[in-house]
Image (cartoon, helix red, strand yellow):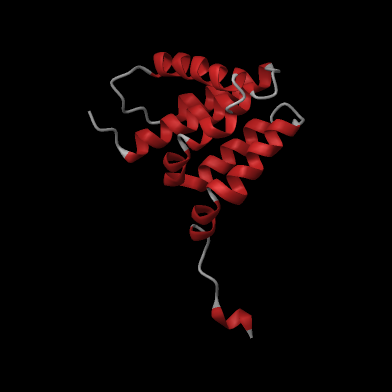
Length: 135
């Protein structure tokens, strides 16, 4: 079964959220609550139930982090995040800040997302530049 672009984005958003949730090796209740809100808000269109997918993502993410492959793991689903780069960055910013502090690892992932992986999509989603303001 071919997933819709929206569903692929939903799954990538869960992967990103779990990565950011686990990357600093500290899981807070506020992060857990926010992650639940994000997951519950998604329009889930997959034959795999949300909870089963989420549990699998936790396992995959933990494996990537334990192997020191967080960046390559992120690259494996970055193309799906481009579907709605603005929302992906919004969720990433919120997920990393909800506990009141950003770790170095979280900051590194945010920088990768905003300056490399999603940069073109973030810029192209902005309003067109008004040429009259250039003069």
